Image (cartoon, rainbow, N blue to C red; front, side):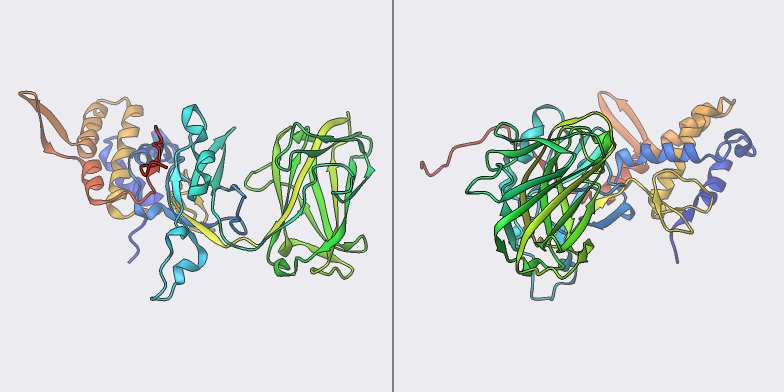
Length: 429
């Protein structure tokens, strides 16, 4: 038997407790109030029925730290597990190794805690970083999977670097020894704004063998674009030569929802999503081309490229608490606020009862009727209990639904940690 009820059924339970007759005449659909009550409830408890899991991009890679955060991730510290996809189907004699565990470090993007994740990357850490309202899942994990260095993209043509040529709107090329991600320099260039298309082509002196990544791995490069509002895409081609190559059109960076203005973004090209032209040979890759598509206009100065690499990665998934408890009865999509009476409330009966009384408490503040004070006190008593102080001691005649629920349900999220002082080695060395 399905323990879940719909929004319509919840409303039918709420109305008799308000003493207002047909409450929907006064409150309308009540969807907003139910959504507000849900927010109040989820601040205080994490119902097991809100646990979700999601694949982390195409894979988790060594030395790649930003990944797409699930859109319904609750708060910034509600991760339960980050695990290899195959771990859910392990044979009985195969356990996950300690190195396959990822701990969590606190990062609220403000204050002194911001640096913790970056400092402790070597410890298999994770955090949720929120910048400009966008959540990014940050993971530091050495997967042990195959990775290949391709070229630094740190200097213009010299004996140690490949031949780099330019086309279209690309102009004012230079080596930038001040602003780079790796290898002590980056390739800096401007886009004239004339046609909206500019290209940079890289020809290696010797081909590299990427056969072990063919149709599985991904290629990465760092891009700094001057004005994100004018950015459309980067067409990234890689192959044996200009007539035999794979092609990807990239519109968003690794782990981000959009390219940032004048900031470094890591771009990821998945081999599985590429289209082939001619007959490229994965074991003999030596030709790469970056074509920047953007809106015409004023010249864009100080765009940059840096560090081209390739990696196989490893398939991982995240298990987390969701902020969306309502499921569309038709599409099955989750949502944080209800929009129809047929929406299913994904909570067990105990948590649904808390939501019921939280909704009553929310509606009582808008009721402004002769019974609103009594109704509010009743809902408050059911949820919070009766805490009376007698001779400086708290006397609980009734604990309330919240305390009852918390005592019976353990929070499964990974505890966050922060170091206030780092002690020297106790061995004396």
